[in-house]
Image (tube, rainbow, N blue to C red):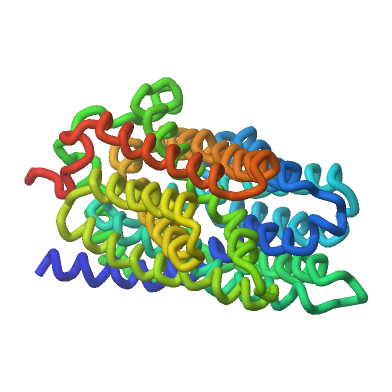
Length: 430
């Protein structure tokens, strides 16, 4: 009866939290990658080469890297409600400000500032989920939250490309897209301040008995029979284990953003497609990725296995990128891109159940932010490498091979975590 009650309470928590924070991440991710759709017409308007576009798209992650750890530490201290509200309003203003750039330099500056503004959002949300859900639930929970990534493409691709053919206040289509897609973040930032609940203990929508059930589930993680838990910020930032996670995540993120920022241009390069057709076709692989993420996350929780739930989709993505790079037929190239989208999204969502297992308290705030910030430096490298090699070779094949190598490297480094530390899902009885 106790287990059934716990399942019911955690389901109530999930229904309250996940749709809303998933919406926040949907808006965040769309504002982060909609530059890929804008590039279909923006690059020519402001004089961006492929390499310059790749560098500018990725420079977001340099600002993100510099401010990620301090931002997450502030969130842990002042609470998610206040800090996430601040993040969303500031990034919404800057995202809408992309509508007014008029040169490559302005493109670089606003993209960098956008990264500064958004720093801390994603690791803050991962940290926030650890306040509410025990580790045994996190494969499914994190996958459900990160479902916003492929959904942002499923909905955002046709929406963004449709806006490219529209105009508000006489603005060019890509300017209209940035202006309109930046507004929801500002509005939701205000909603966050009044709607989000920092921790179970202050949740008015839970009874005292339900709060006790949630806390009991979380306390079970703290007494689980696994050594090596890190509690202090100093130990987290100096831990070889944390840095190992960061390098693994680096490879996965390189594949994710290398594909995300360039997919619209690769698809349009198939020939004969309008902007709207490009958006609709681009949405297809991400729809399949969304379905796969949900099923894969549930399978990870059901089996209790974590390591191979990262390795297998990483290798699938690597194979997909190679297929898209080496086979000239359009249908096979599109299949490769589809496998790449499924693989990178599955790998990235499976990843986060792992470091949250051994990071505690302030170590969780700093360690998660460090892993995410170092890993997301690949968000600069992936798009830049794709653009640089496109300029040098005139095609996307060499860049896709580089993404494949990154995914293989992540998969090969993953077993260094050690099976004993990553495979156990349920704690030993106490």
